[in-house]
View 1: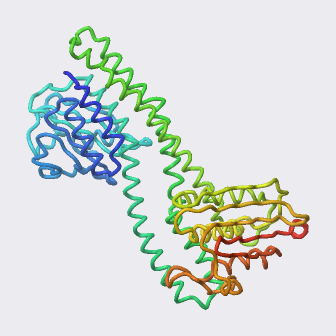
View 2 (view 1 turned 45 degrees about the horizontal axis):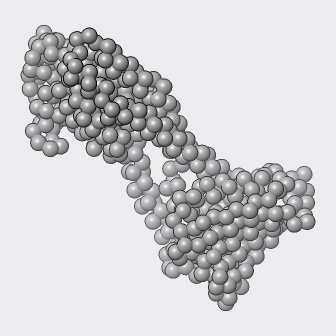
View 3 (view 1 turned 90 degrees about the horizontal axis):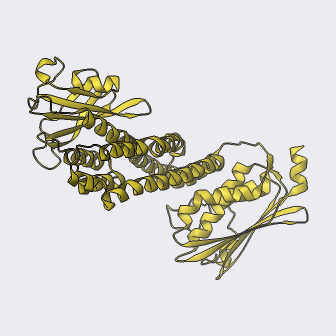
Length: 451
């Protein structure tokens, strides 16, 4: 059997480029059918204890993205269900003498089914039937299993992304309801303090930081497996094919084709780049967890500079659209603070600075030790705050933002956290060239509070 390099190249690119679960499954079915020259190929996706036909190639696909009589098979029943239960591939040379064969859609005389296994659990099955007995070889089984192993983390990732989008929609509706509730609860400041924090975190993380960390962990783990095991295994299979003395000259030329080998090499590079991106995302999740943790009234010795850096790491996607961030963080002594609440202050001031910049601008953040005070400045080149508003800027429920976009609590919360809870100072200067917020935290007083 000859496997066209163009089809292999198209399959590899489809695997990398398809983000939606439905698109991915149809591209796998088509890629497997075309590469292995099957007259039939079906992808079953597992949902609890049921296997559902989700994509097809060949006989069971009468027209584009339509399956002939979509079939659902309980795990453990039939040949496909057995493969899902055992996690082991099977070749049935003659279905007429195998009592497990389910003859519903059309009478196949031989069948090949391989499991798609992810974290020790079969999440899908790739199945092919032929109208000829004894039509599948052990080599085809081995190659299809390699493809299934490579597809496993992509299918798992696409399933997770689908779940993530559904969660995102629910959270967006929840955020909208929260905005309405904030208007109704404007007179209850103590309740709104925590609601304001949760609203800001919800906008940035969509309330899913706790859901993301675990999938990131197993995504990183499985991409490592792809790099260390699956890709080398696929390469070894190809090398064994190259050494087959019965391989035709034309097939050998295809295997040595420059474009084909480029795809193999690029697959490792793209997987490594994806792995690096996931590791970066995991670091952001750690920073977000550190930011949003509930510290209540706990004061500990903390590095203010690290708090600012963690907050900026969370906000980097928000800021990259219109803001250049310039940092001048001088060495500071550790200060006894509630770092979670101060991170809330930093986030609020930085987001206010970002919103003050209409097109492109700069946000400068500096820290230094001034006698017995740690001084933090957040300076933006935005539109500035009109002078008549400055005297009321820290007053609860006072806002210059349009109705529905601000509660008037952000800066009031900052003032309370800095001045009342940390015995510090919070001041503002503004003109048409921009705004500077200055935070001062007492070093000596905070140490005495810790003692």
